[in-house]
Amino acid sequence: MGENATPGKRQPSKRAKVPAAVVPLLGVVTMVVGCFVAWSNRNSYVGWFAYAPLSNEVFTANGMAFISPGTQIGLAIMVAGLLVLAFWAGYRVGRRGSSGWQ
Image (cartoon, helix red, strand yellow):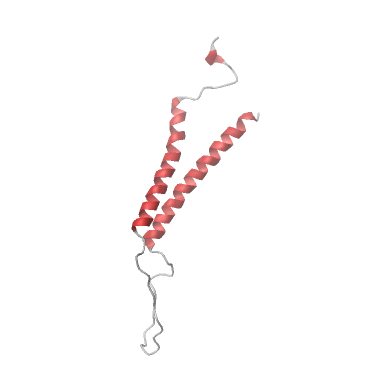
């Protein structure tokens, strides 16, 4: 019959190989974009406040975080990229490990 006609193994099509390379590339690009956004929005100053009992004003801060909202968004994008990479790695390990089960 020929080499390609073995009943036990199927040859993966080229179409199936393309998404396998696209998913980790998408995860890496997302992670790099998140790093760039976080780096470009980093704080270059340290804020402080003092106690002023006679001013009759209430001090309210803009936020209770030590990093800016832009940095938080960049870190969230980076975590999304890491989640894509973790999903891809788990999927690949699961597919490789399940080939022996029948």
